[in-house]
Amino acid sequence: MQHKILTFLGAIIILVILGNVVGGDKVDKKEVNSSSDKSLTSSDNKNKDESTEESYQIGDTVNTKNMEITVSKFEELEQIGDPDFLGKIAPEGATLVAIQYTMKNVSDDPIGVFSYPSINLVDEKGTKYKDDIEASSAYATETKVDNSKVLSDLNPGITVTGVDVYEVSKEKFSEGEWYIKIGDSKVKIK
Image (cartoon, rainbow, N blue to C red; front, side, top):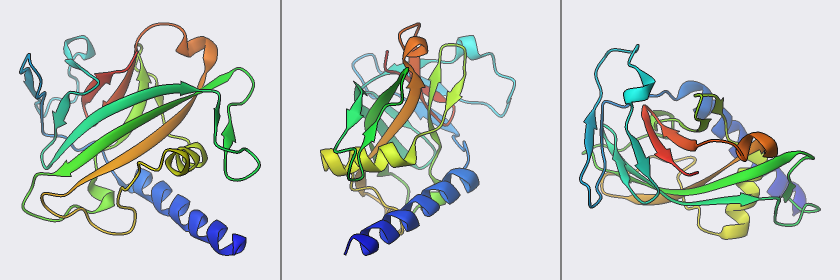
């Protein structure tokens, strides 16, 4: 039984890795649905000044070409679950930064996992951090909130919840501002 679970988790990890490699930062338009009702439209200019990039807050909705994505929760953790069984302990000098988010397909067509916008942790200098698949799987198991699509498309009108965990230097994370970057948009978490 344990072999079947590990084989299944291995297959999921490989699919997520392939999704991160093949998926892109394809975002055409961004909006925030909050009391301030801010909106920002991106241009095709890839050399856009980062200092003019608008930052959203946890709970705001970022609209991409075909999805609405909302970062709903952020946690800083030292351990996730039972490290003896699919859990994760932050390495010495590191911390685990966990986020929960929802994604809704607002288009008229199914969206494959390889077409999702990339979601990364970035510091105020723009340094990008990829999610830790092992820690993300442990967090999904621990919180039981992740119902995201791994093997099938996200159909129109459907909303799913996803989780990501990033391994970051504890010293670096204690300094400055931190964001979740969704395509070309940034959601401030700290």
